[in-house]
Length: 436
Image (cartoon, rainbow, N blue to C red; front, side):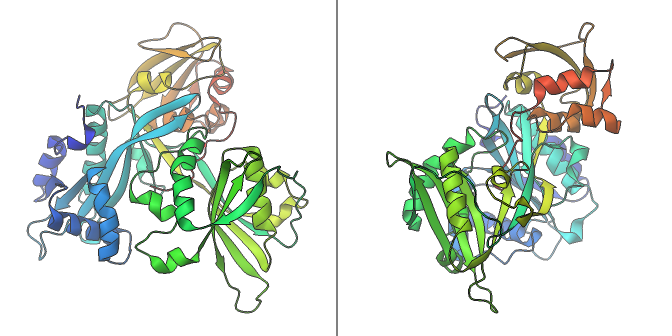
């Protein structure tokens, strides 16, 4: 086990497999500016982004010491310094029922179109799982551009999100007034508040992941994108004592045919209290000259629907999976969260990659704390669980009863899945509020 996950050298098994195909795998040296620039360009290319500017590279530069970046190179191409594939990862805190656990956050997974179907993505992802194990991290996490890739590596969708479009003129606010006040603030004040408030709210939001590196700045309009930064507006909710308890970041999009019909795009809305949540939404829905409010990455059970007269004016424009979880060490991962105990549950996990394969028993006490033991459980409730579905069940957002009905999860006896739901389900749907 390595004390510093970021210093783990290149995975020998993956490097050897890629070398047999004439490819070279290397961990990026943060001090190598030329290699960093080439890696960042390849990453941008993989997501069809514009080539990074000097200003954006300066923002990314700080991430080079916060993450372990890997490139795959083809020394036979015209530009051998430019990676044909990229991946990056770092340790990040994930909020689970009753606490948090650190996982290996994987991002920037790209493969050049000229090098597809050569097993590169498989070698990179299986390598990252081995690195996470070597670092002693019990699970890996990621957000995805395509939902058909990651189940084969043992990841399962663990949180879902909705995009909302609200008819602000007709939705009608009926929520209770908040005792504090909403005020507009400048970006520097919003940044200062966000540095503490985002983490405070993250720790109480099951499924949320700490924001690391340049991703924080981009939530509030990155300095490297001054045009976008100028469009952002910021509002803060202060409680009765004057303490800031909520923050919303939004931008206005003009309607060329109706000046009174602007669209508000809510980039971020975080609230540490129910009062702050109500006050921020109330303010956004009653802005002058606004006809539509749009919001992204909202919970599948958004309280807003209960605060308006006509919930049909809140339209879900997209429902999708968001955070994917891959359990690597069931004993540590399952013991890190709390349960609606007491109770006992056996899990027989099938993991083709071998990291979590085996049978495990959870003994949950009256306080909801679990002792997890590896080995064949005694008689009692037992579920046969593929490793990807364990990731879906882990945060309490998926129903074992529904998964059993689908035929993908098996009970030893009728009712075992219902017992699992009683223990595992989260009181509120797990939610990830950002991308990474």
